[in-house]
Image 1: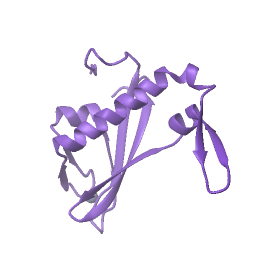
Image 2 (image 1 turned 30 degrees about the horizontal axis):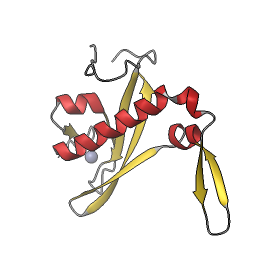
Image 3 (image 1 turned 120 degrees about the vertical axis):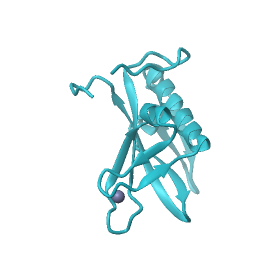
Image 4 (image 1 turned 45 degrees about the vertical axis):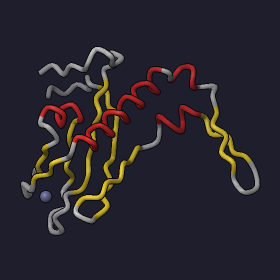
Length: 134
Ligand SMILES: [Zn+2]
């Protein structure tokens, strides 16, 4: 199945993968989804183990989409970012962190409150053509 992105997107062969731990205390299975699939299913996803269903609102989908766009833009700018540093001021001195290290190597985590509990969503960008046919 071809996954198409809207025409404003850079045509990079990347996909946004998100996972989080199931909220059922006796389950805690990893629930993973592809952002584009989630948009198609209108924010609905189910635990593969206990079948608990989750429904994410448009606001959360929009946050994920903006994060994906940001990461796409960073990937695209990767070459020029190699020589850019971010200065981080600490109490005693300034630390310079290379931009591309800061933004492309770090795992990105979004924390969202569901039913009064904070849930961490791990956000990864992966190559679309990783040899698997999905
Ligand atoms: Zn579960």
